[in-house]
Length: 112
Length: 115
Image 1 (cartoon, helix red, strand yellow):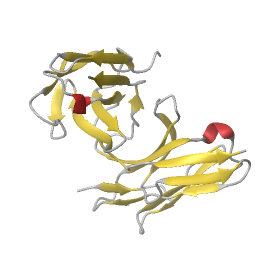
Image 2 (cartoon, rainbow over the protein chains, first blue to last red):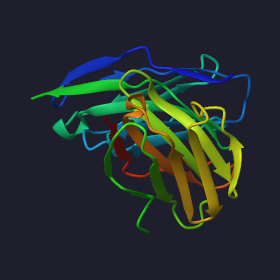
Image 3 (cartoon, helix red, strand yellow):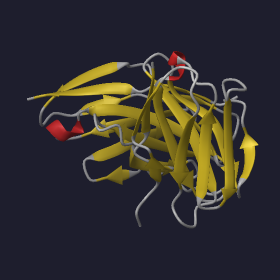
């Protein structure tokens, strides 16, 4: 069975600094997709970034980037120049053929 | 596009009452998911549909929970009878076809409180 593990329940970062959130997953498949979702206090789940497993190049979206290590089954999220609005719960997710698996989340605090 | 629409946004009910949560997926999406989120258990997948057909309902906690998708634009999650331990935020999400790379789009959630 596919599982997604986020080993950091809580993280904090100073405003304008960089933080990396960790995610590992377990799968025997070679073709799948990975996502990071953000859930601010409003509870709305917002897609931050996605990565196709067949692509070697790491995805980037403005200040957000991932470090995708397929062999290690690792998918970390780097947030550069952290802003107060980045404070939220972050979920890592795995998708194959429409079935989604979510990690338990990392709560990110941004310190002014 | 209005995104995934859920109603009501908040629901407070007494134990034993029937609760119905509603969801309208994004037009054109043919997969729909119901999740429950609590502090203790995190985000749990309850059931998902593809082309209005339930594909996996193994996450449905017990027979008190039921879900339907009578057409491509509407789904309900019903709890009957409700219990205090059902208090949670319930999310509906939709995405494109199974086997594609479409990400899930979430609704705003329904906060259910059972007293």
